[in-house]
Length: 352
Image 1 (cartoon, one colour):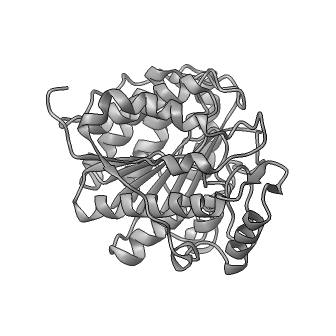
Image 2 (tube, one colour):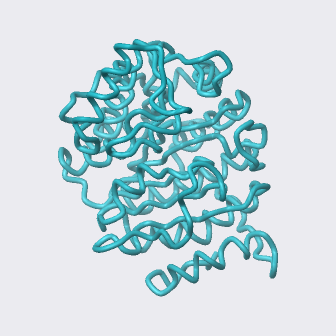
Image 3 (cartoon, helix red, strand yellow):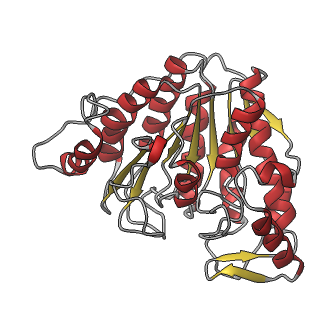
């Protein structure tokens, strides 16, 4: 790569202070692996040091009772907010840093200070409901950032792509009646948390603006790229977002211990290239990736490298060749139910 864009990364050693029981998969070492993908590219990145989000910012998505419940739990830590979601004494402050860092990243992109970026944060956020912590998540970083863009920067339409292997129930529920946010999720199904069926498509004014793509275990690069090419691309072109946010979980990686997908580093590179090209085409390149899950260290390193290589290039990266649609094959079986629910509103779905 001979030329680079101004690309920001949110990274801070304080994110390591959120710690849990021995053997818990959401562990500080995840960010050490992410740093392994960052280091060879660090001289091309602008570091954004996170600041703690205010209660008012967090309450754009979460109830005050929920925020206070998390704060009290951390005062009594160590402990759990549900069987999967731990807190340590620093966790409340660390979670506010995760929100604040994500908000500042997307606002810097919206202002034109940087072109794109990656928030290498923890704890993750996409499972957090307005009034409930769950699935390792305390506050919904991406959802809060989306609302901040709308309230502070005049951004109207936002596309949230969630490629974490687990469905982002909290993000979906934050926007399922809102036509200004298109939520697209690819996820292993059935898997935790049990939501994300294809017929969960939004309601009221938001009907049709939730687009779930449930995928069976065993899907790899061909299936993911095929879904991006035949579902994400036409849906994004129809919606015409002003900003793209990616809930970027690296747990579809073939090494991940909490899932059954088979995506490789090359697959993440192809997925990132498609999203980067959509951002360039539709919204002036405004694009932010926000770390969610990913529990295999190699997957985190490879995924981070793939994302950064896609957004650092001055020229848009090369797109992967279209995945073939084999009659009766895995990709066709994934696409069929999605088309049945959404093709009346989005007639171009399914086309490569």
